[in-house]
Image 1 (tube, rainbow, N blue to C red):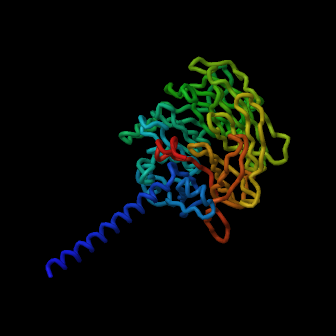
Image 2: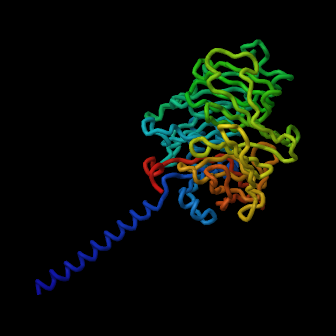
Length: 450
């Protein structure tokens, strides 16, 4: 009898062990199937009366395997993040517009923190990227349109749009210490440039609201595009920050937001403004980055190289840019014409222009862009039918994430599908994606896995 009981117990224990192994194996398999990166996208439409907005986080592999069916993690920025901002600044943030991660190297704790800029208010929110929890909220002024981290990961450069100022936040991602450096603020509307010209001038630079800052890869200077045309290059290390190069609206057109560096050049675009003022615009310029340092340049020096322009088109509004593998091709999206233009960065010649319209979307309105770690997929934030910011004509009918397969070693691509989102308010679709970034979560797998 005792022997039979022992045998029965052994069989039962074996079954438990087999079950445990099976569960562990299943968990390991699920983890293995998950990709080495995430795709983060911001819907800037309100989730509550005083603001909010939503953060969507997708697993990269799930998104590319089945864009239509991909499930996201959704974070309401009108919840804990809003409460923290209200407690720390006395005001609630409204309309999250741009996101950036901290550095790209393990040595600087890369991709562990994310900064979110709110365009209706001046808030910059710091979050833990793993837990999605808010850490710190800083009010930088009237409007935090965009934010960019310096390569040494010690500062964030903030475009305070309607105050017409550039702000600077000191960052220590290890201790989670973030402070607005008030003494570093650069006023773009008042005062003079190094040449003695007015910073804001009806003929030269009529509206100096900063649109997007972009720091060069060595961290020497930041390129600041302007709403009314023209551009400043700024030494962001000085206190206060200082203009070291000045461009007028004839040399750099208005509303640029795409900035990216390749082959020793900083590519800067221009884009459309409001429907009443500058409704179409699409130019791409190249600047040699080694021509800028802390010593001021004369006006419009070095002269920008006009890579191409589509200003004569009935529909034109460039916004998002990215680089393919080994920086070989520059991609520039147009959210009015629903096209993508690719440029050979070695020759600065257009290689291709392809449409994103098709079965997945008849009117995608691609806004900002990012690319997978292995450069085989591109992700685009697709605008909605009721844009929540800008007053422009970036109207789309499939708000969500556009999933684009890279082809021809980066020369071209094809829209494979859309991960749709929705936010119905009063019978209207208010969902309006804008910010999108790829976050690497496993550096070894992203570089080595097939």
